[in-house]
Image: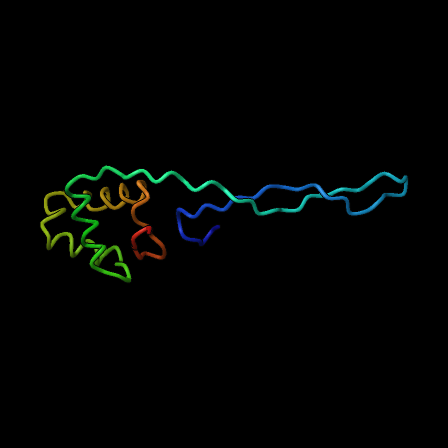
Length: 112
């Protein structure tokens, strides 16, 4: 999905169906998309550094999530990212890659 939430898993397959017969009597076929169940992803606890844990605790305290700037401000107030501002971005992206947080429309929330 172009504008959907990151991390969602949507599975489908193409199913062949006959839709008619041509002038020579040969079958005409096409494909339809059929939803399929996927096995639940294995839930493996992500290893988090102390800084990741602090970033996560800040986000947990905001039930409706935080914008990037709000999260950065609160992290700086907790003493994170003071020496290197890019660390905040690195930690957020690492948490997203580990499947712990999601970002949608500049709003960060817990993944589950």
